Length: 415
Image (cartoon, rainbow, N blue to C red; front, side, top):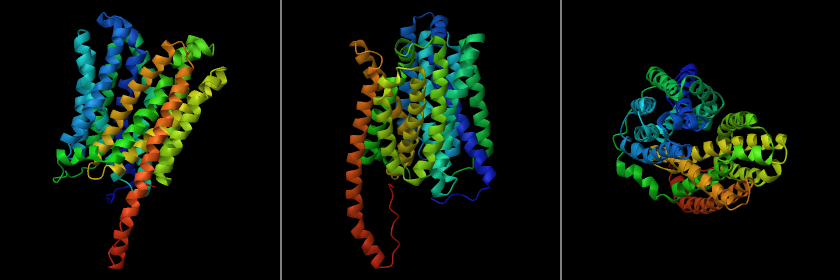
């Protein structure tokens, strides 16, 4: 696909507009966790029950990504992005207006539906705006909005919700969502629809072994990070001995790691995508296995959280680009499914981490669980590498025949 001829400024403005949507999505996804006690009190439920509000959002992401991507495959991408943000804004308006627990659950499910599809479509649009050698950086720039939300958006919205009531945080998200709609409409170039695309074509991605293996890496590899992150508060207070007031600082350091990792991940993916994916998976396993040692002192535990955030973000960017690469004609679904797998990873990691804690293994045990999950992701990547070699070996004879007749040879992918 040839990148359209656009000025550097126009490309930058378009990517910033796409990243703004990621900032809004990241803010609404994580602010609920910071305001959970306030939300619980506001709708008259206890905190454990309020946790289902978070789960319903994640369920919306898992369901919405494949359904919307498949059904929207023939729509112009800029129009689809605007429609997704309109749905996102509607979900957050209903969240802010929810009169009770049931309505709140439905509103959060609705708000989660466009999450994965938005990132998938935005990644494809960003990649189409630049030369092939810069696509990793373009996609990581879109994902940077999600990373920055953890450093700026979530703390600011949490503070606002504590000062003016929890509903005000979601009204702030609504404002950012509306700004995204206006920005995308103004600066993101129009892209023609694909009249040949069908729902069957998109769903065909789920029959591709490389797509399924990459999704598996996302579920288990990234699930390892969530096994630790879900219990970071008791880890730093009960094990390291830090005060409750230090938890926001630890989370800020983690978010800073996410920003650094997202920026670096795009560059690594442009250099060598598959090798960077393997390297990130190995690195996160190493960092997680060292969590019991790192938890002994405040300095080392903070350093570990920075590294976990950074390496996990490199993994996310590489997974996003890998799915876009191996999905073939079903790129939209492939790109959107990344966030379905990451939300499944959230549930898996938190569940397994909770199991070992409940069994009496302590708050450092999730680090070992996370390392085991990362090892499982590495095994999936090993199978993917074997299949990739076989695919290239089968392709070489046909490429040689094309070259003998003077025909162009397709470029090998999957660096």
